[in-house]
Image (cartoon, rainbow, N blue to C red; front, side, top):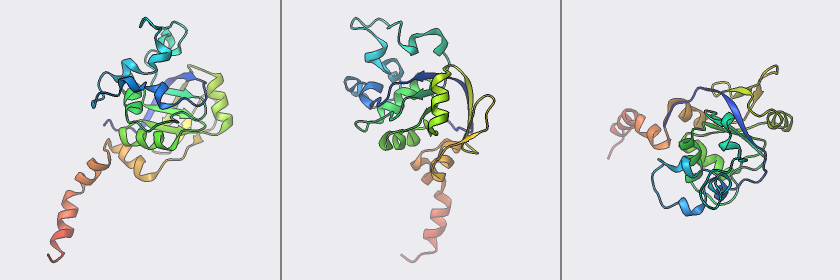
Length: 192
């Protein structure tokens, strides 16, 4: 998992509300247990036509979307079934953060555990981001703020442990393994 301290990028805007996990990565692509290659299937039913050709009207197929690492989505992204493949596909495509005014709980938790930063902002900030696609913003994980041009930083909530793991590039197991010496010391002081 890649350590994150700050992400500065232009945004890709998908204003649709209630983008569920089956739209993010359709169920027919859930046969893999690895992350590699899932980015090609990200939003497959919207991104490609029935023959598999890119849909020129879909935002990720437009030249301005290339290289963007921040996805701004409509309210309630990640609803639906729990699947780690959804954040895997977003990460494999190149996104590092998803911003919305509402992110489904299970998707948010799966994202945090897999290195994708879910950022929930207030309605006014969200409306501004939706109205200004392609704007460059900075998400500062150390201060838990989103910065946009000409405005005060906007705070966003994040669990302190999840922030620690993201900033150090470790998942929960990696964190536990990093505590091995302290665990052994503790256990050595305890009678069997």
